[in-house]
Image (tube, rainbow, N blue to C red; front, side):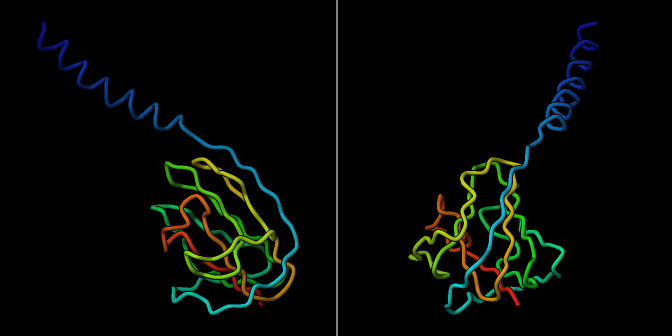
Length: 146
């Protein structure tokens, strides 16, 4: 009888763990605004693209994916944190780890599953970083607006 109880317990633990993981979720918050351009050389990275309907960037494994996103003027870009630690999205004047923050947009700290959106109204190159992890090269990226 003890063996049967141990067997049932060994089945119950993974099931409870799956239920708990499935119940974990996040909320979204966002804002939008206009855009001015920051001029600088873009980082060498793969590019994504989208029309004026909107686009998304994933924050995961301490990186922005895609690191370079090309959108049409008027596009809304949404960043979603899929990491287990907080991140933010803050505009900067360049692509490097020594870039200076600008006041164009900032998401504030976003927990797992939270999102931030910004609408780019002017053509140009827009650099941004996670200011929490700005020392990481993968936490710097750009949006190119055409």
